[in-house]
Image 1 (cartoon, rainbow, N blue to C red):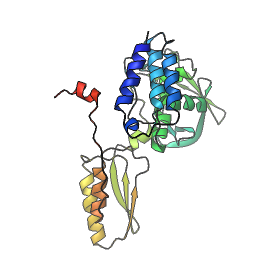
Image 2: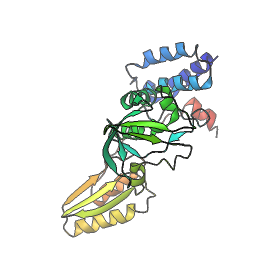
Image 3: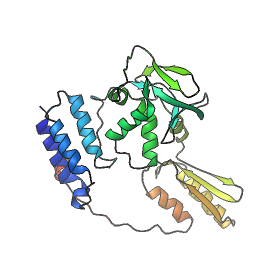
Image 4: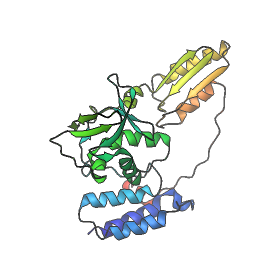
Length: 276
């Protein structure tokens, strides 16, 4: 039923994605494509096709080329605060800060096995992407069910912890209720402070519209003119954004950001979508 759709997606990707123009195709792409086309002959519903397509796109190892559909993805998420360091999953305490209590199982399924499922369907390009997926996607019923977790939305789900205890967690369809410690912490995209004789900048999102960007740049310039010679520019956990925000920080230190070239391709998909 979905074989023609799969062929269309493959053609679309191979005529659009820059890795094919640059001849920088991932080593396992051909194998994943062939598997996708074969499996598309067997899928019976839109959710199965969605999952197979997501796995195929994951072979590109490009976080910007992915699927997300509220019509297909089950909206239920676990109402729990936890944190991942990219390797393990830890509960947060009552203040929303990471504790040392490790979550071993969710609904009787090992957390590591669920991590593996998420990695198979999402292109996790770097440490920041891994940490984010392991703390947010693992809450979604969609991924839990694919990992084999039985999800009864009328009942709680049981967590098994490394302190010998268990914990019951409710479901919600309001993701804002299920906000994590890091997401709340990173609401302030950029901030600064003096740590002794060091000017410390913490930037968690690159946004040129951030109201704290200009004051940070101004404070940095003042500190340098007053004789400060040590600066820490901390971008750990930064989700990305507009690199012009980073240029502003560098320029405040009298540095000239390197110029980078680019090639602009207008794909057939773009022409069809934006004919003007």
